[in-house]
Length: 197
Image (cartoon, rainbow, N blue to C red):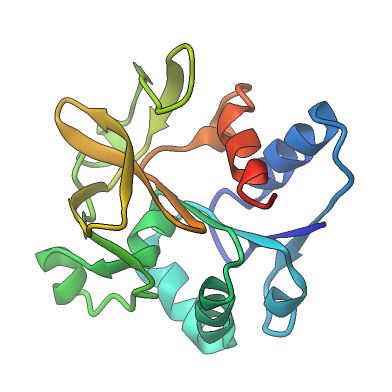
């Protein structure tokens, strides 16, 4: 099993470490690789698009030829997790800010997003959230976080905070407004690994 983390910008190392810990704790064999250029995405059994600055990340992924490879992987059923900026990139539709900045989206998940739903960097926060299927709350870290403002009929809502959708799944795609890689709780990365089974 090979898991690729898009490593152009953002919380790359944290995701690499978190998914490696999840593999170790569940005694699964797997290799975690960082993807900076095209050609590697098709060799992966799962992909993670981390947080970062979504406009920059989207532009660099296009430039490197990675975007089209991710779209192909999504169509082939490869599990893909997008966190924060990664969630924005997975979406089919964005808000006014996305349109204004000319943000390129992968448009592979049937969701619409509000890019800066939870304010700026200084308004970052942590809070306990309920996550579907978990028997106790998960400590979610929100940093300039987006939110999901609309979901299609095939999208399952996994978590909400104050009535706002912050986690959802559509078949092989998992989108999170928060940063599970910034906690020691392995449950979301474990959940993602189970999507590969």
